[in-house]
Length: 267
Image (tube, rainbow, N blue to C red; front, side, top):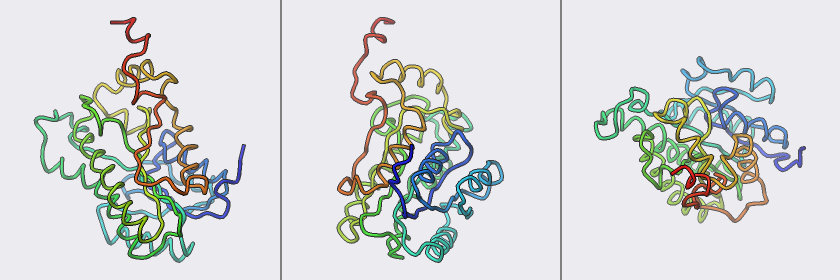
């Protein structure tokens, strides 16, 4: 059911790859709620993924952009400005770790790979907002979101250097959010989602066990990707105008539960 929450709103969605992507689900729900947007991902991801299918279904334009390249991002925002004028929302759903892909243990991290993870997964968020702010492309009360994970707050073996990247991502949201709110009345938040069966999640060592544990140790169970998409759309809407600089847990209660009876029964 559509509530027209985003009727007339324009945005950019970073990171949709395939139907398992949270960003893909966000695009579908945002479209249903009346939004128009540009879809963007790295050139290599566009070759690997199925973004044309999503673009066709939502009537969206695809613009390739490497988030480590200021030139690519400048081009993306120039296209968005010509197409829409001002924007109302941006979703940053980007994360990549070569250390994770190569199964290099956290304590043995390759630092070139480590830096790449921080650059793509966290510093890119700062880069995106810097250009958006310089171009003054966001409408007042616009909403910028990035997707995070509870490994930013607690040690989760296997999540590796992505834990540090998510911690930096959340810090950037708070600090940049202060300036963006004060100067332009733009709100910046992160959403810490349950373990979710995405392409990226599947590459994490022990992800299956983590997913099952989180599901059992959450009073409501793991939050599905589609419900995360609904939450993102609510955060893009005018219903949440005064929420900013927050890390918002969307995890069925996992983040504030010690042990459920189900888990205690297995110990």
